[in-house]
Image (spheres, rainbow, N blue to C red):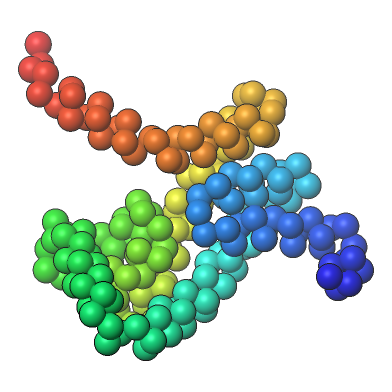
Length: 191
C-alpha cells in the first residue's frame, strides 16, 4: 500500500477508475465512468483504461479456467456441469448457425459479458488471441453504450450517484423488461 500512497493525485485518480473497471460485474462501468468524469478524465482515457481492464481479465480468467479444468476435470460432478455448460453454449450459438460469424460472436460478448463471449468463441474454434479479441470487441461496444448513457443521465440529472444507480438498474432489469414488452406487444395486430 505504500506504493499507492506515493502516487500523485492524477495517477491515483487513473488508478481508482481502472480498479472500478476491473470489477467483473456491470456496476463497475457506470461507477468508473462517473468517477472518471468527476476527475476530469476524458472518454479516450477511460476507454483505454477499460480496454486494459479487459486485457487483465483475459490474462486472469484464461489460466483460472484452465486450472479449474485441470483440478476438477475428471470429477463426476464436473463432468455433469461441463456437459450442461456445453449444451447451454450450444443453445446460445445454435441460432447463429453451426459456425457463427465473428459479428455474431461479438454480439454475444456485447449482450452477455466478455467471459461468456470468450467461452462461446472457444466453442466455435477460436484460440486465445482471436477468442479474446472477439470478446473484448463486444465488451468495448457495451462499455461505450454504458459510458454514453451514464454521462447523458449525469448531465440531465446533475447527480452522478443517481445516474449510476439508474444505469445499473437498467443493466440488470432492462433486458427482462424489454423481453416482456416485446412478447406482450408482438401479438397485437396492426391497425
